[in-house]
Image: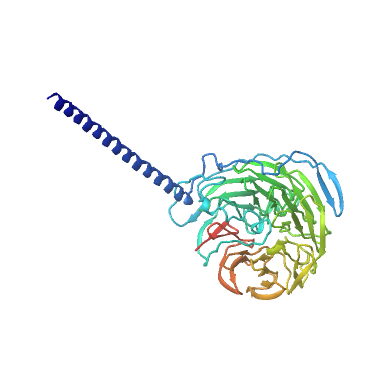
Length: 509
């Protein structure tokens, strides 16, 4: 009896232990299910963040404004004037802090908006598309306009950003940061108050937009003028904006990722900044002077004066693929190769009258320049130089080139001239194809727009009649009227951004 009682007690204990074990197992299963739901919800939240509308309450952009690698102390830099090197102590003008203004989207877009998910400087873009950015003029420091994405196959507009204010981006060009934030600079040069050289109230704005067209912040200034200014955005989210109109033309401002002023310097350049691998800013002023600036405070590190002659608002240096050589054209018709400390490596004359735009550095390191006289002298050439400065080939066109050539991976060069013709020139200097835009001479030219190239060979470019052309092998795939004539930007998931009179349009199909 005692043994049976003991067995019964052990059996009861075993049965209880088993029930407790089963209860614990059931609890663990329930907990795992709850966690799985939470993970799925988080993932879904990040996905819908692509269609965000609202900004942070304070108008800020998540991220930091840390200095880029290569920022140094305030030691003086060197100024190179031809082969002569001198030392200078540059002064930096402190800028007034401008508050970034956030607000609801003023864009029209497809689909219903969803809450934002912050993801680095800016916000709202899946990290998987971060490689496809357009951070500076013509897409990169090489200024080739080349991308690894396929652009829109039709003129379908995904969204339009139309603030309805007094500012216009008709001749400016947008840029796109590594996280998909779109930046566009707009000015009020058409305001009658800005027509006088002494005007001090031209005013300008810089907008930071999410990939769905909703505004993150807007930087404003009542004295700086913008007509063709193209910003540049650094990897840390700092936006550099040159000003090219009014009494303050030549000022350069650095805007923090939150939309406030970091610093401002005067008398620099009205051309677009080119950002080097270490963050150094390279610019060229209207009289062909090349400058290198420190990104942390805008201090001039060195200057180099090229052959005298005016250069256009798109004039800016280009960098070799490894970032160790700076290439610049000049209004005097000379191409220069400089070290990143401003020392002359070589110089070569162009075959055309003058260079009024930026060089492009293509595959294999070939440097391409398109020439034009200051007064539209024709005919003009596209020149190809080797990395050592030897002329490899030239192509002579009927019109003058005021914009930078685009370069395909196979070395085909595409550029539009001022008589309305886009040419594609094969390696060796032979014409691959051409396209002539309809319209009267003097209105249909490609005056301010350098082409953006899709991975499928389509070139996107805008002319003086405010028409965007998608061209392939000499034929128009589609056209659209935007109201501007600046350079398009192709980035992200194949979205084409084009600035116009009313603001910005995003094409995608």
